[in-house]
Length: 456
Image (tube, rainbow, N blue to C red; front, side):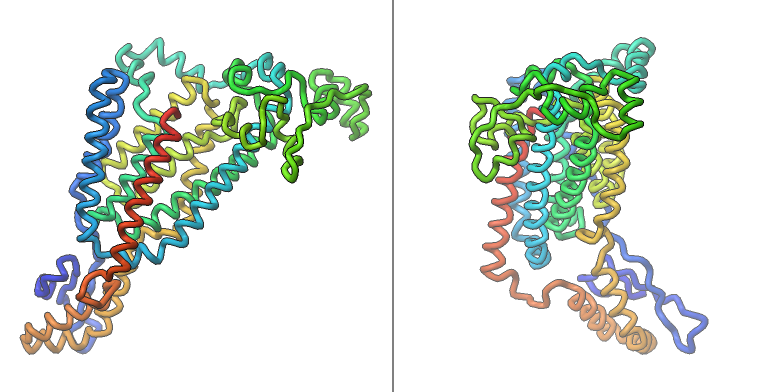
């Protein structure tokens, strides 16, 4: 009855259905819903992916269309800043956002150290001559190439989606809070994304550094890494004597001690890195490498098989965030892109099938575990329902008295009480400065992220 009495409460569902168990009329409050999706975010996502794919068809047109599209996105987002009502909520999420970003950067640094170690530990000779592992997923894709229509195979081979695409799709999702398409705060959503990413990267590094697996691309290490040809002295003593001799392995199990006489172990070049010299045994530098941090620039995605796929982790976290925050048919599109990216990782031998499978369920589970940073549940809904329950008897009496003005005033009080600010003066000067700083910083981070990941 009172659902539309107050213009400021277009989504406040209140019905006057009587409760038979009460002595007087009571109100049954239905579940509040977010405004229906217009589909604009999904259309923007499709436009971005399509325009970026044009680089493979017509680089000249891509050079014109992509800057225009991204500039249009930025201008539209900036135009919504004056109408955004949740800056106070964004302000409360600043410290979790910064903390999550620093945590992610530290996790990426640790991962880069581990990537270099697993490649350097056994030397270039081992990486070049060790056969790849048998992968049934690769066999399946090769078999499908023979069975499926050629146009479909070409679609599967096409480089439609990459790492920087998934990062950009998440950025678009986070910025959509300006249009009330996603629940605020956007910084909270970003904090959850980076925090989950950091945990996933740490677990990934611990996993692949535990057991060194051969690359599906045996030539990769020689082309990308400048490490010694021979194994590290630890591997010379504890791995090489028992790598292929079954009798030696049996004796090793019986004695449970490294009994083989390895003779004089080959040593490595040891530069003076000061307090960071402890990294020499892990990074195995050469005379031309310079400071320790120079070695991490070439780590990239590594060359050994790195269980599990970091690219797929990013893709799955983006899809999970999109599904939970926005939903709709566009989330089906995002998951379709995840599937396409997974089969390309396997098809192009960047990863084994097991790496992609593990990344998918690890990403899903990790996202489910970090909901405390940005819960998808609308907290304001609970506040509204609680306040409505408190004024239930007054609303009932006003309805019985046909006092529409009293009903409207009560509902307006509920709306004001559930908002983040009771002031009608608009955002303060400090809040405007904060808003501008957030937008500028976010755009800079986006540009840096896309620039650093555009090559995959």
